[in-house]
Length: 136
Image (cartoon, rainbow, N blue to C red; front, side):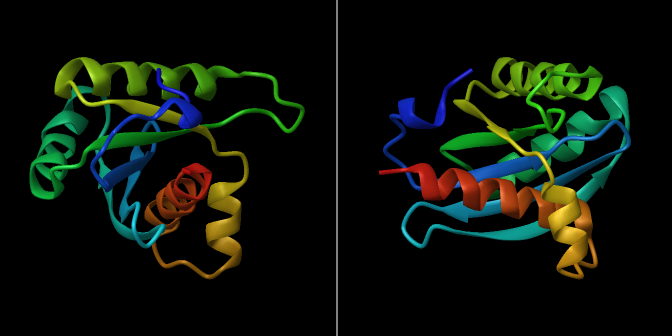
């Protein structure tokens, strides 16, 4: 996968995913404003997730995708780390867009603490803003 510092996408629209087995939050943002807006949470499992993912990608026509990858507080990987990384690889394979993985420890906790009505979509926005801040 592409590292944030390696991004060579000339466009400005990015779509982020906060992957979960049952729910995947989605947010859209752009390079110019360096802000992200929660969109929706896809409530689907397994292959049923792909049609709504394809629809949101078709709607926003992003230049690249960002996926939050969770780790333990000490940085160690766990089962959800590997699941999110697999989802990132599948996104790249299915849609041919650059996919950037971002460490998303505590994004859902942060979204809930901020009072988000849709914590998964808000977490995706937090992940995307973290990525946008990393761009030069």
